[in-house]
Amino acid sequence: MTRSVLEHCAVRGHEQVAFFNYPEVGLKLIVGIHDTTLGPGLGGCRMRLYDSDEQALEDVMRLSEGMTYKSALAGLPLGGGKACLIADPLMSKGREALFKKVGECLNHLAGRYITAEDMGTSVADIMVVRSVSSFVVGTDPNKGGAGDPSPWTALGVFHAMRAAVERAFPTAPSLSGKRVALQGVGHVGMYLLEHLVKAGALVTVSDTQSQSLEIASQRYGAHVVTPDAIYDVPCDLFAPCAIGQTVNKDSLKRLSCRVIAGAANNQLVDKSVYATLAEKNILYCPDFAINSGGVICVSAELASGGPQNSWIESKVGEIYGTIARVLDEALKRGRYTEEVAIELAKERLAEAKRRGRR
Image 1 (cartoon, rainbow, N blue to C red):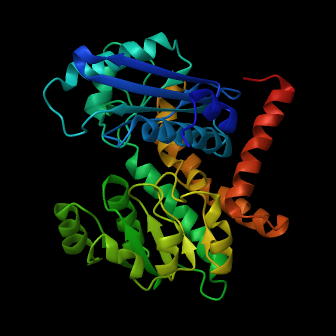
Image 2 (image 1 turned 60 degrees about the horizontal axis):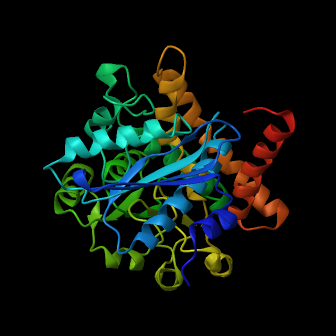
């Protein structure tokens, strides 16, 4: 049954959802602002074609809510937001005009939402947005920005994997020799692959792009399988680094892993898979708890003096402790890991509200 926008807001707790429609430049944009208790909502601008407007709205709502918890767990002074630009990410004609209009839309929101690059968008796109709006991060490092956040996202996921392996394999608490099924070797996945190979992991990869697979195989020695076959690969860790909701009742029937830890957002189809994860004794690392390296990176642009790699590296390194706390608290509380991660994030939000801080 299709929900109304206000029903979506009531279920997930969103403060604001904005729709922008400018057909003269082909713009259909939805911006979700989930919670600004800790600061302005920050999250990337995703560009993709959806099967329906309802699907796009659901994506915005889930992703912006996840950004609230991601920034809260990472200890950032930011809230959660996300934008979905309903357009072909491969378009070239009219692209500059489209992203200038995105910037104008951000100005209408007056700083309640700050955007960055995301799936389907690039630093070049963000620089076009920046030409008309200041409510943007993830900009060109040659212009004082933090640049591509992908390497930092990958590093954070790698740190989380270390913490998870120590708990899932107490007699062999190292990634060396562990079998990893890596789903997606795009920007983040390729950097993660490099970390895993250096750590001695045995990695099998899948992707829809043949060029990425060729690099993964020739440069890093990864074994390559088809996108569907990745679920059947015998492995210790499954790392979803492509689209969301690939952990579902069908894929879980096929997965043989002990740990799920990846960079993709919204990896679980919904809460219905919690019980299956428990039954199969799979340790799930909540995506918003471990893939915050990107938002940590771009948020550094908001700091006085601009982004500093030393601060970013130190902050991303804290993801190891964050996921260790989530996993340990889940065991202590007898709750599912994602539930505990959300509880910990909400505890920080509640404390901020009690103190009257924004």
